[in-house]
Every structure is written in C-alpha cells, then in structure tokens.
Image 1 (cartoon, rainbow, N blue to C red):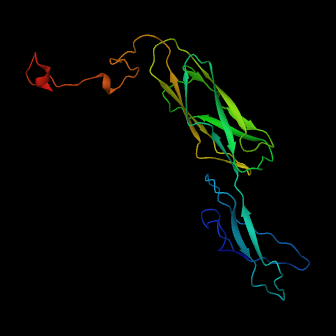
Image 2 (image 1 turned 135 degrees about the horizontal axis):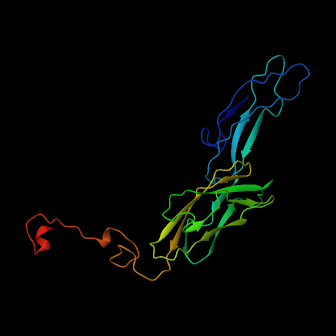
Image 3 (image 1 turned 120 degrees about the vertical axis):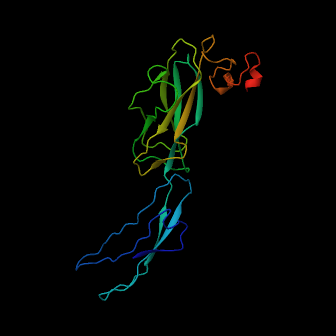
Length: 232
C-alpha cells in the first residue's frame, strides 16, 4: 500500500506520506494500516489523500477496489470571541466569551473542556487588580456546533488608588480532541481602566500613563546656571 499524489491535501503539510506491506496469514481477511494526519490551525475545508494497493504476491490479485480516497475533515476551531477587551475597574465581573467555529453540520461527539491560562505577563496584578482561578476552564457540551459560545468570568478588583491602565494576558491551552482544535485566536488582552479621580504619580502631562512623554532630560555640565537650553 502507499499514499499517492492526486489528492487536494499536501504531503508533509496535511499528512505524512506512508507506504508498507500487508502480510496476510492463512485464514486472515482483514488488515489495517494508518496514515498520520498533521493537525494545524488553518481552516482549509475537507481535503483528500489518494491511497493505492499494489504488487500483490502469493497468488493474490488486486480486486476492483485497489484505490481509495481518504477525506480529512476539518475539526471545529476554539477561539476567544475577541482578541482585546476593555473594562472599568469598578465592573466587578468581566464576562469573556469562548466560541466554536466550523462547517455547517459539525458537532462535538463528547464534552470538550478547554483550559484558560493566565500568562501573568500583563501589568495587572493577580489578586490585587483581578482574580482568576488557576484551574479555570470552559466546557462545551456534546452536540455543540459552530457558533456555540461558553463564558468565563474574571473578577475585576477596585484597589481604590489612581493607577495607569493595566492589562491581563490570557491564552487558550492546547486541547486533545478529535472534534476540535485551538484556532489562531488563542490569546486575549484585557485592558483595565482606572476610575479614581486624582493625579497619577509621575504623570506630568495628565494622560493617565507614566512614560517618556512626561519627562525632559538635559545635561547640566556645560557651565550655564540660567539657560537650560544652552545645556541641551
């Protein structure tokens, strides 16, 4: 047996080419071989791989079904409904949607549990600016199809002091499922806007962000004591 060119799937990209020999003992009528499928996050629709049986020995001959077409169907894709969200720190609970996408008629054969990870790379501080359990998951029930949405909740905390805008970085963890895969939209940035009225320490231009625009740097070793421009 072997995979042959002619299908719409790309060898080495969508599947791993395979070939081999099937040995039938006396009385055996069925043998199985496998074609490794490459999982990706590109939505490409159904693709095909051509299969061929050839060169029988031991007095056997090829029957009418010596070729076949293997169809590689797309799994549904799991993603955040948005890549960025914004909330005020007085919001209390921020709802974040995770969704399924795919082809009409697809559905999950069993429950699908998707873990949501806090990357801890944002500027917001866990348990000071927000709370999110380390084992947060969302579950899509068996039978769910394209367009299904599940929601997770992030608790936003008001710390009572002026702060710059802070961020939370979230990501969907890889999943082990025949029916679904993680899409390219696996990350989400949440912006938390401050609600306190008052100057932010170091924010001299009043834009609620402390950055280089708040400061001017000059050298003061060129001898002038009255003209700063001379020292620039």
